[in-house]
Image 1: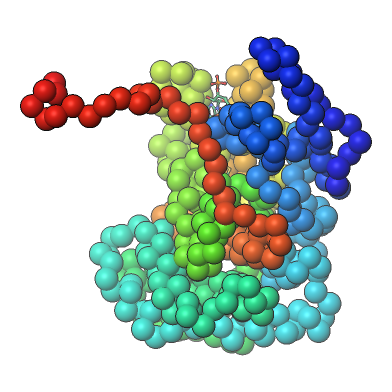
Image 2: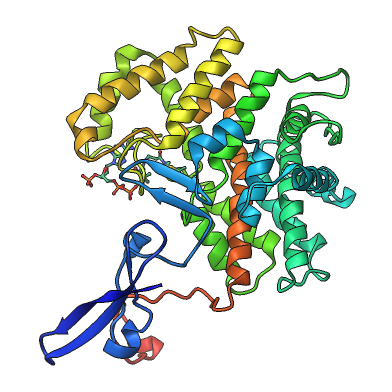
Length: 433
Ligand code: ACO
């Protein structure tokens, strides 16, 4: 992995040179190897927000933010979204390869037979207030999985890690649907093994025990695609959180819960809910200019939700695919004149022509259109981030597995630039103040 060129750090005071070698991946920028920086120079690297830091080596996902490229295990996201199902993509992310028919059959069978929750787990829902945010319920109930699968779990065993991945992918949709049913006071729907992964979820989420539920195939495909597009995104905030939590050897269900916590924030997965709320607040195309002005005004905290990305300084390829899906869904439901979709298209057009957004390379991200599709599917906006969590769970567990199987894995432990008081003596209470 080492390339043959080096960088030199020069300490002008001591007139000392330090050579830093570089590492290169299969594609993408080379990386300065800083592992011995402190040991050799007595200095740390300062990089809040990790804007220039590669925290690990990974084979799972590659992003070129300038070119707007996203690949899972080397496959462009556009091809995966067109030719594969979410479960095929899960297999790809977890094992490194797309499944053949026999492998897919086995993988699907394994998932289907783990969708039920331990019956005692259903008691956890009842401990929440009915109006609790579904993400708060997710945090509690997914975290509680660790109480059910802890003692028998050996994270050094590949077999145990694979079983954990199956359980996460299988049970999270059941938990998402139950969180929703609980919040609206309807009975939980049990999984059905004769349905596909997405059909089963839609039935648990949107069906009721009094009648047969038959999901529209266009909507099933749309949701499957949304899950594919959310499945992984290299070292994003929630995945990094899962890795950091897991680096201490913690229970993987608890680690995935830490990812759910991080995802909840509006700067991350909470943005899809925020986009819809923003569109409702803007209300009409006549108000767009006023809100664009607010977004540009540094003294106003308002930001155009669903715009901008830490990595993409070009169109987020997922946003393009979701926009296409949006058209398909609105067609299938005869909602061509959907006012929110029209408003979103117009907002996108105006923002993309505005010099502020052009100069700062702020393009629509994955969340900009996903909320409109989810709303059309009948999913309420407070469930949007839970839907994101459902798709991203496979990415979290794939990264956790990759990290635990790495023989050089270390506990994650960043350092800091201390800017507090230097050493001082404690005065007796009577002489303080
Ligand atoms: N609206 C208005 N201005 C923006 C926006 C926005 N949505 N996003 C960034 N900017 C401006 C910032 O004010 C900053 O301006 P400055 O250089 O004059 O200070 C500049 O663009 C760079 O933005 P940063 O916040 O420094 O970029 P960062 O990489 O830290 O943040 C983030 C990226 C959090 C996604 C940001 O663009 C944002 O808040 N967007 C809105 C929320 C959102 O859609 N989040 C979803 C992200 S995708 C995901 O998690 C799936």
